[in-house]
Length: 315
Image (cartoon, rainbow, N blue to C red; front, side, top):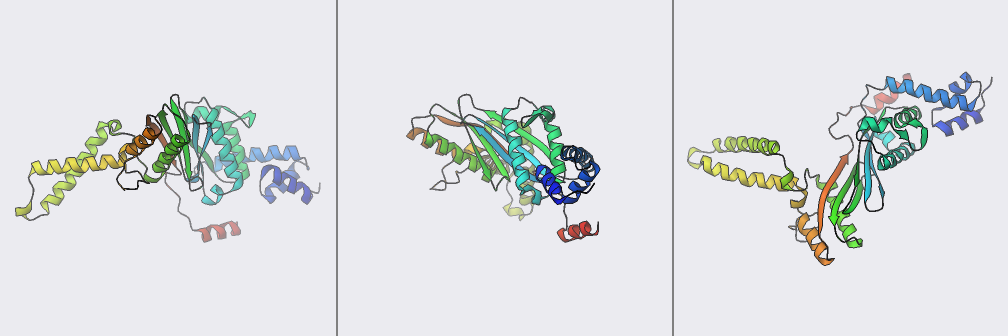
């Protein structure tokens, strides 16, 4: 049976698959569009298996929210930044974020196994496999977090079109535009300066001990490099160490960081929130934050683009 260009075009619009893949699927199904769609989906599963060992460290981190009290953030990875900027991929990640906003899953395995909101006849995992068929590249839903504020609000911020996404939860007894703006400004702070904790009380003892050990070793090395008559005693080194640790802890704790928009260059985040709270008769404090950065902690594949194009042309 001869396959027309119109049929290929229709199948491409439905699936987003390549021209040759669409033509082959239509040929195998004798021009049956629905059967061809199903065939492409099944081949997508096969492609997903073949691509399983590839590194997907690009992609997007996006947030979805409902009102001022509920938000979710997801990271969906692709193999290349080219795909990460693809409109079809972006639309898919938005759907995954909305799925996370309503999920009851407690971990990524449960998330992948639940019904896909866009089509309850399939699971999130099956929908992912279908998208791999469309994109023709390994994709993975790496992680998600969901936040529901009980005594306050949540604010979100996405930077770089999805390179970094942040959710900040704040406790407040007043909710108005000024408070919302302040919490969103803090979300921007989290995106820019990447704190590890909200307050110093949250820093684990093992982290404190580890950092102390490293800084002490550095101080001893520096001290031993000095002329003997200028070397400091162990007691002085210990005091210097306390100062260095305090400085480091302030840099990694959100409340103690210098607020990025501080006019005097000194005001901390906690002081900024106290100022906004006082002006609005409110008590405002950050409860927690979540910061996703695409591909953080993952090994990225290094490729030569020209070589990749030539390899595809030769194939």
